[in-house]
Image (cartoon, rainbow, N blue to C red; front, side):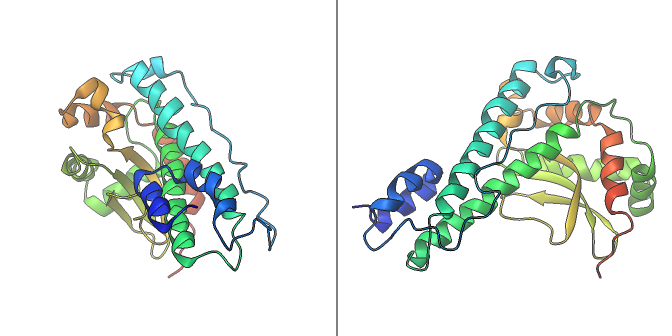
Length: 241
């Protein structure tokens, strides 16, 4: 019989998608009756293709980018699908500690998928800020250079650890912020990511080793500001505060 210790160990190791999915029906006192019915989206998320050939990126290793997409991101999409299917088997008799662990994994993995999709989509450009987002950055920081200094510095502060740097639009008041997310469960409430930079070591270690400044430089030179502008345009008229 699967114990609480077994389940919590699986959660800690990040293997919850497979370990829990296999063990749920065996836990004493549980059933797999889907009551209520699972959401229609459960287990149906699809992998988004890269919108460009990795070989076209300037200064970023093709194999590193391909592996990042095909293994880290794609693997997380699969894990989310398995986890959603597992959540669909839970019912009123599910032990609270099991549900709590699974729900924490859900937010971590979903945020990982969302941020990775933003990350890959906001690359493939010429790295030259332009358009409304450039104007908004100048209004907030005084100049694009000031903003970029803070954005790069925020990335460097995460070197050797893990996390994301996200240029975020606040739906509360329309302000812009460079956010350091050192955990996928941490985000800016009512914030719309405009530009996401992956600072987990899998994003740069193969090519740049510990020299994170070179990775940040290469990232900035490949930003697709047209994509960033489209994201801003989608939300620029929204203020919820």
